[in-house]
Each structure stands twice: as C-alpha cells, then as structure tokens.
Length: 103
Image 1: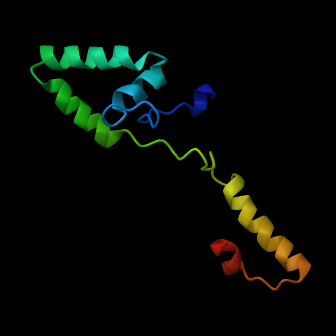
Image 2: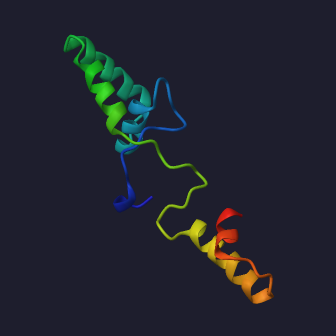
C-alpha cells in the first residue's frame, strides 16, 4: 500500500466492537491492543468523552471496500463487462450492452 492510497477505515479483520480502534491502529502502524487500552484510559479519565468520540468515529470512518472490489474507478470490474460485451459482438452473439451489465 502506498502512502497516497492509505485511508483511515474501520478494520474488517480485527474487530472487537466495530473495528474503530483496530482501524486506527492499522492506519498508524500500531498494535490494536495498545490503541484499545489508550482509548479505555482516555474514556475513564475524561468521564466518558471517549464513548462519544468512539461513536463519532464509528459514524465518520467508512467500512473498507470488500477484498474482491476494484481498487480504483475503471479497474478490473468495469473492463471485464466491456470486454465480455465486445467479445460477444465480435463472435456474432448479438448480445446487447444491457446483457453484458447483468452477467
């Protein structure tokens, strides 16, 4: 993963509740347990502000894209449909563009 493509997202793999602390840990290159412990300490010392911050992070941090999803617009997923449609046209299959989208 390059520095320019690094995004702060909730973790899909290392969740305890919703993946917020693990997502922050992945983004910062830390152990998720350390982030969870720090979050618990901040919550206790701030009389519950950490809970509000957690809920805000839960709402603001997006889910990571599925592992099989294309990483950029116009990536593999788009080109496969066009390629299949193009091959069907060349083979004389008579497929329409709508047929290529549904397959």
